[in-house]
Image 1: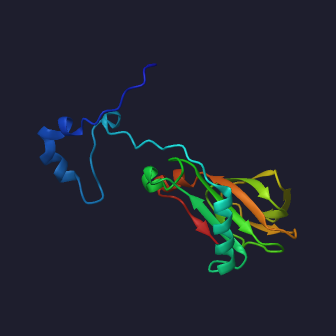
Image 2: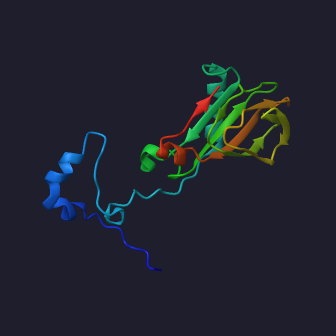
Length: 179
């Protein structure tokens, strides 16, 4: 059991003589496949470079508009090749959060875990009622379902880069957000 199988779609071949039985089972949102290893593999996810300077301009524009929250912007990146998962890979999503000086994000929670890298700024996050201080270069983790917010205590903008497991949860149909 050490050989990796080359995946090739053989569904037509396997199912051609039993299509009438399959039609009795299938519905609009329910399909039958025989032997998962003999289905078309997902599209390849290609390497990417996200340009920080361009992205920072977008974050500043979103924060200035304040349509979600004045002084705060959050963008996530995904690859269409990941389909429903909407991740950079089928199991991970990355994003950037921008927080103007002396600004606080709204407390919220979600059932995805997040790992943050502080790209710029100084401040703290309140995670389940406890303060965790951070500055440029620090990494911090927010466990799934923890209520959290981020506070920029500095006189300059704060930028947080995060990676989450939201695509994995999205694929399972269980991704949740709470405010």
